Length: 113
Image (cartoon, rainbow, N blue to C red):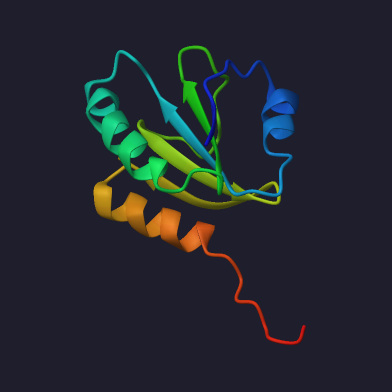
C-alpha cells in the first residue's frame, strides 16, 4: 500500500500528491488528539485490506496547511482524479469499510470488449 506520511507545505504539494490514477484517501489527524489516536489503528487495520488499490496520505494538522473541507479531526477526505468525492469525520469502522469498498471497486469487465 502506498502510505505517505509527509508534511504538505502548500496547495501545490497537496495537488501533486493527488496526481494518480488511484483513489487517494487523505487522513487529517494530530498526534495530540485522543480521538485520532483511537481511530488510527482502526484505519490502518481496515486500509490494509486494500493495498495496491489506493494511495493514502496521513497528514498531521500541526504541520499541514488548513484544508477548507476539514472542520474536525480525525477526518478522511476521498479524492479520485483530483476531485474531492467525500469527507468522512471520525473514521468510524462501518463508514471506513463502506468507503473503501465503494471507492476501490474495479469496473466489471465486459466479455468481448
